[in-house]
Image (cartoon, rainbow, N blue to C red):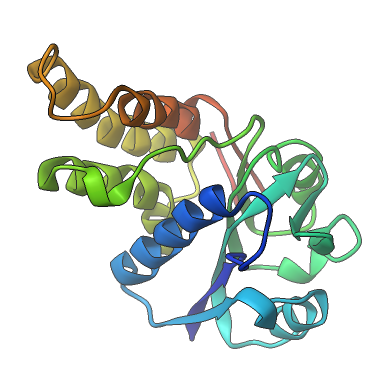
Length: 212
C-alpha cells in the first residue's frame, strides 16, 4: 500500500513560481513519509488519472500539492477533485496543500471520507529555497510535512495535528527572534515563512474518523 502524491507542478502555468515551491513541498512530504509513495506530476496529472487512482485499493492516503479553490482542486483549467468525485477518496486520508479547499470541499468531506485536511484561506508559499540557511530549511521541512506525517501515523484529532504544526512553526519564530536585525534572510523570505502560520490558523480537518 502506498501514499499517492498528486503534484500539480506544470510548466507554463501562469503562477509557476508558486507551483515551483508547492512542488518542493510535495518532494519533502514524499521523502518524509514512512510509507512508499507513488507520485503523479505535471501533464500526467489529469481528472481521469485521479479518478482511476482513487478507484483502486493501492493507496492508504493522498497528498495534493497545487492550486485550490473553495470547492475544487485544479491544475490550470482542469478540475482534478471537486464535490462530484470527493466521495471516491473513501476511507483514506487526504491532505490538500492548496488554497481555500478547507471550505466547501473539507466541509463536504465530513460525511463522505475518513479524513480531509485543507485550509480555508490562501496558502502562501513565497520563499526561495536556494537562499535559505540550512537550519531554516530544516525548520521549513518540519512545518510543511508535520500535518501529513500525523495523518499517515493515524492521528485524527484536530487539536493534536494543529499543535504539531504550531510547534514546528514556533521553531521558525525562535530562529527569527535570534536573528532579528541581521542579513541572514531577505525580508520577502521572512514574510513568506511567517505566513505559514496559516497552516495551523486556517486548518480544516473533517471526516468520519475525525475528532476534536
